[in-house]
Length: 393
Image (spheres, helix red, strand yellow):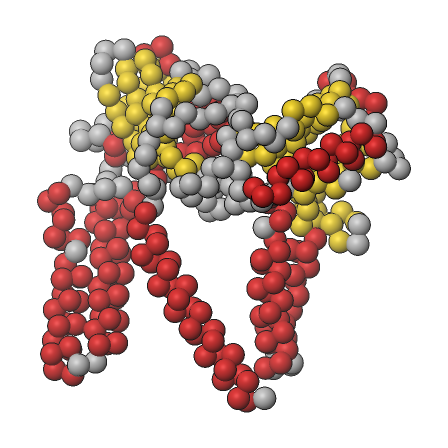
């Protein structure tokens, strides 16, 4: 029996898109080596990617594999461990924070591995069928099963409420929000700050939007004189992009501290170092563990409404991390300016007293106003390309 995770199942859309691109490239220009070879390499890597549990009746072992296999040969291994069936205590089916998980527990730590855990990518309508299938196969293998995907979380994040950060709740923040961040590790203790993402004071409001104002004026002039509305749209888009770039430049200048060589938040078992750019007096601070009263993490699911165990699992988005000291002093750091998910994971690792507080704010709600038009334009462009290719051949 093979149980693939939701990460492994995510490879199939990539395979379909790249395969279609390869077909179009072969039809358009079969001699285009630079267009064909990269597609073949991507297809091979994506096809070979595996993140799964393998219950092998012939060898009497359960294997946890995460890496790349081609023709049943391991090419690249991120993790590969196994456990003999007679060391398996039970296979536990459970729902943790809306995600259907399977955990293989060992009778003794001396078996080489104490446990394996994977998260499934099963559609909600097929969860009951998947549960029956897994339990039936486990019986055939002579393994004990426990629990089930009954929709009741063993660990539930209360809606719009607080709960303590512990070894279970911290799993929500174990994966980085963005692929740009490195894989979260218990060894990570330094977190770089993206200065250009920090908010600017109100006095910079019009200054950072000056390119947009100028682009709108040019767009109005073009519209009045030529009625070329496509050119007007391009002008406004250029103005929006220029305003973003303006914000980046101004923020980097405003938060630059000449006497400071680094802009990293650092955490150890005894203290948290906050760089000077977060303070008006431009003096860095060290927050010792014995002076910290409470750390409060304000967060919500990035894919709002998707925390019910559907195939595309949500990711937590951190709005702010608030520090409260014993003397009543408070400090707040926006989560978007650094790898805050990994930072929260480190807070649990070093046993800092932390609460996670889920709020009802929708994260990155502005994205739909950008992605929806881009998807529509991309679909139209693809349709015209296919039509042109059809006419050629």
